[in-house]
Image 1 (cartoon, one colour):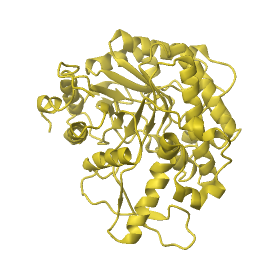
Image 2: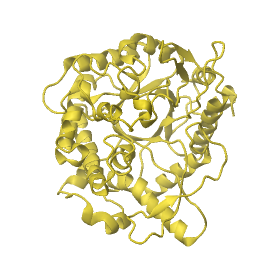
Image 3: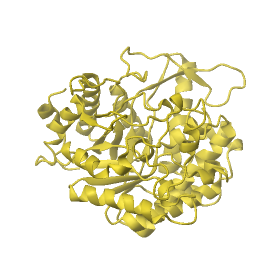
Length: 457
């Protein structure tokens, strides 16, 4: 479904099409205007952590190219821009003094979006924890949840009157499991006990952050962005089916359960509850406040099989092989229907508010040839996932918008700059931006929104 006119007809007229980025991945200017290091600055500069020790010092130089990048966003015709705010620019030590120059930058960003008629969707935490907080234990320390709430209050007080929406966290699965259990992201821990502490403290920080935002701006829509996993058993064997359910508890339930039900999954607590930090009175009530929306980041299915190793920790799974041969350049299996399966299951298991697809896109490292980037595989990937989103809308699910990942090629975390997800190509030597074929296609789709076929619901 690559005909934009036919695809557009499948969406309500007020469906929001946008693009997404994150602060550390595009801003650069890592030492400018009072910003202090984050855990990702430290992690990037350690050997063996990030591909070829790439770092975020320059990235896409977005901090210094704000106006031209806002013009670029506007040229795509999108209705919304999802960006993150860098905590180390706002409260450089994590607690204490507020850096006005950092707030000034985001004020220019939000005002620039408003002037161009683009909705501002801010994310407060996209993994760049102020490094000073690591000295207190980072996300394993309860004090970090309080520090986050204070940071949320500061940002909301300054920008909340002009934001269209705010998310507390982006993909806590990554900043908990990938960062503290699997060691792939900063701070690079491989320790289940640390990860379990980070899990509860992050959930608590979300809840306290929601309270802080609502205390400042009661009518500002608040949500959280979760990279929920679409989990399939590697076979029909009962052991693999049971493994997939454990994986669902471990990868999805430990976030969705507390936020939307006020409880961690029973099987997870039975296995690991004794290793969790103290869950104090009032914690679960704070975590489970009603949200106005939630965001889903989806890229690829997760396939698991049972791990029969004696004494292995919950969820006791191993990776099962992909089913479909098509992969992106980062090696991720392509299977768009998994996104629909996931939304259906999550809505069955939890009472969820309206949903935005807050990230979806593909890594294809296709370069510029004669001034053109012919990234047809990315275009096909996005079109297929938008078609699946349209199916969900037709089934009655409250899907409100779609943010393509990403606006532009950027620092792809542990992969450095070698993996490209952008609809706009970035030449990192010259900082020249070139809209790719997929970007022009998306521009054509966005040009048809908002339009007059508003439907109820």
